[in-house]
Picture 1 (cartoon, rainbow, N blue to C red):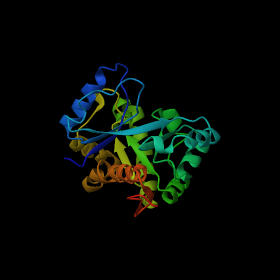
Picture 2 (picture 1 turned 90 degrees about the horizontal axis):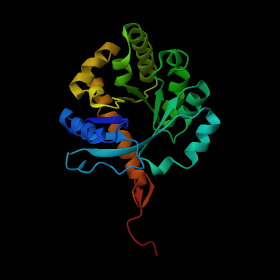
Picture 3 (picture 1 turned 180 degrees about the horizontal axis):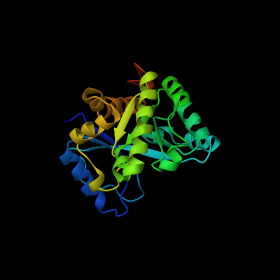
Picture 4 (picture 1 turned 90 degrees about the vertical axis):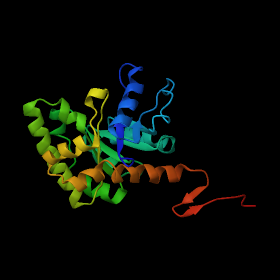
Length: 235
């Protein structure tokens, strides 16, 4: 179970619930969780719980130009940079920018039916090394009609990602323990999206781990390029 990662926990409305979410993540079997930082102190004891907190930032730019401005000062302040694509210009810009790690799309069905992960974004993301992130909480919150429509869109998005070999990351996107699910439950839920068990496990283990390890390596002191590191005084 040590390899499972929930790359997207949202901060709850009540700060005191955050520790409960981390405790619940540990009980469910996750050893790493992605969490946006806050001005408030981090909950103590995350390491004692066996949970490794991965810092992430979730950008919601209104335009491709705004995204470029935001990315200019953010890239190496966070271990994961995610962009919620609310418009096609943002989606295209984010998909082709190597500073973006994961693409998110709106939980609103009306918006998702207009802006979703299409073949062009898949092609751009493949070249840039960007991943598609799917939040399980979007499915859990949807009513019967909305859920059926959303599942249909997600199947197409995953197939577009497969065609271009774009990694898919499945996260909870939860802001409360009630929306968190165990790795086993997530893999079972992915069956609704025509994702087989082995592929589903990769979406909550190997794929997110690849992003975290890659960025932590680049953020480490002395990093120059993949395979090249300064280990002492160059004089």
